[in-house]
Amino acid sequence: MIKLTMLSSAEKVKGQGVASAYRELVNLLEERYKNEIDMKINSFKKSDITHYHTVDFRFFLSTFFKKKRGVRVGYVHFLPETMEGSLKLPWIARIVFYKYLIGFYKRMDEIVVVNPSFIPKLTAYNIPEEKIHYIPNFVSKKSFYPISKEEKNLARKKYGIPLDKFTVIGIGQVQHRKGVLDFIEVAKQLPNVQFIWAGGFSFGKITSGYEELKKIYDNPPDNVKFIGIIDRSEMNACINMADVFFMPSYNELFPMAILEAMSSDVPIVLRNLELYEEILDGYYVKEVDNPGFIQAIRHLEEDSNYYDEMLQAAKRGAAYYSEDRLAEIWLDFYQGLLMKE
Image (cartoon, rainbow, N blue to C red; front, side):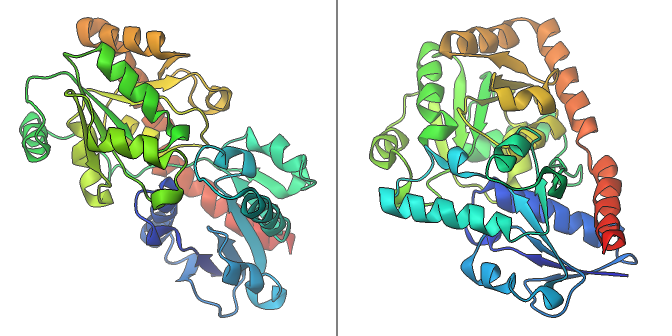
């Protein structure tokens, strides 16, 4: 039996995709591999494999006790360049943190990335490519799934959303990188469509653009509703009450919210980012700017055949990134690490 330790503080801050990815993996291993894996959470007892999900300093210190930690696996959810537009840090703090982040990754024996586009970026930091493995995020159908019309209506009533309105939802922290300003501008051009944003300021006033975004958050257009940070247990109903998932982010890794929406049978509209090409191509409506987003949402609202076409695309994406497929990949990965030793 593999002795596996998970080290993570992701769930201390609500509204983070990192926490969702961590929780999905922990639940998967607990449900499927109790006989193959003896998993401990945030323990510093001797382990065969230690999987680092966050880059806390105390976790960094533990990497120096190699015999106790076993194979050190780093889970890369972000790089310095992907954090631009997320947090507003003094330049010196930013430089120090970015050096620390790469230093943390270099302490790892193996690295897991959730998007293959990150492999060349990591090798540019002189991390050997043979240490880097691509394993995508996934979502459990037990957590995210379609619900009945009656349940959707109950969710809409709970959040004050008109039952008869075509509804678009965005999910994520309220920050410039997520394209919240574009979300608002698109909403202004579609006054008959209801727009919802689920998420808030997880990192408070150090969020990039906090002052500007907080004014909009507190006084949104009439057809936009910010519903704040939603507990993960309620997120499935929130996604299901929407007709379309729309995320105009400028920079992402592999957003859990996209997988959650696909798993809930909701069509996806995204900015056509290069990093989506390898992982999501064929599963979503791709546009490059606000006029394109406006046209795409109108098309989905007015053309039922097109709507069904993109719904089927989302379903294919959900099947590809299902827990059934990823469960075997993770088990093979962990077992393979011990065979290397």
